[in-house]
Image 1 (spheres, rainbow over the protein chains, first blue to last red):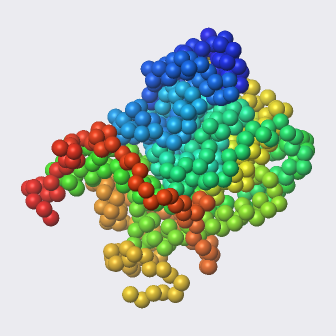
Image 2: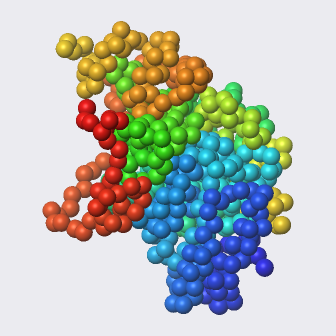
Length: 486
Length: 126
């Protein structure tokens, strides 16, 4: 018996009416995971024992009728720290690390009675755009098992798309939620920077990282964002802006909503079929009453360069803590203290991680700091100003999420620069700290195409409003890969 | 140290004497540069991998050097995009972490200390 086609609201009703128990729902979810896992490979760790225990506790005290998420299972990306449950960031250097604390978002999930059923696979330390940089295994795309699921939240996306779980959490530094959502035909949102606490998110690029929800529908996405949002004193970059009801504008029409189409998002380098789908989607939004106009974000093309300098520099600093001393991998053949650091790090980190640490260290080093890091920080300001100008007149910005659909596993992983350029549509959103969503907007060559909507700071509600209007009048989200109905 | 107009001194300036002549972003990244950066990053690469790594890093630097095209005169540097207000709390001690919990993940401990090899192979100090 599977419930993988039921929304949170429907599951909540079944639970409250006691037509199913939390334990039954968790067991059904674990069975859904099991049935698809050898094909998809979305999980590093399936936490059956902990999940069932948590579900029993929910049934013991009774599902709370006023808590929508009570007893609902989900997967969590393995760079989000879970107390007493191994957390590895898909790296050899953290294999067997058992955290002594929970990330704040995990505390929030538990507080609402949500059931973590497993830790999802990812690119190591969230560095990657295909899922192929995991030190453990590559996850597969739910629509075509020979294709990449995207990254770095590869497992979080594939597990929802394939019907293993209804919901998951991922993280997004340069597109790592939105791009895999696009490649897998599901909904993925990166919140405004500061909307969700980063405490317990293993840091990659501290001025860019955000945790966010994956789901099958727009409304469920908003419902999960509701659980994890809010000010956290343990995260000094956390915002104390009010958390609204993110679902409040879902169902409202979008007549008069002003949507901007940056011409730079439809230029060369974007696959023609992807472009065609997104332009058709824009026309559809127009038919619903939105005003869609072309604009320019002139510094867009520098986004990738700015990002790779800043993210790598921040990462080189953040990853200094992995030194073989207090936790994680410590190399065997060590003769002195220097060996502990150098050998543990060199053996424990994967290729891409080392590449980025080197790039970041280089950018920050004496003689290069001004030319690289400082320059990047200045161009970042210009990219932010471009967005601010557009948002003076428009409510949302629209474009494709990724320049292509999912590609074959094993074909891009040897070409870092090509991989980096594929992030050009998502990166600027992180640089500016804005919220951005990817929703299913069609297909090209049988594979999902994602549309990105970017909003003003803290205006996730308007993003959800437009996304929901699109979803309600199209069928893309209803289509499922073969593996979903296995 | 002479301050060039409009240019801030980076605190690490003194360290990079050998790079002083490379103020421009010339992309003749050498194996020696890579080895120096590796030392700063506490990483090592097998000799037979260093050239390949230098080439890849060089290609990435080619890509990021497009920033040269942008005139950033007078543009402020964005450090982060948070709301950026320092939030204060009462100066009252609150419970911290349990040391034994924290030590659970340490490879080798002794009497509540983290045990590591000596700084030099012979057990001496630097």
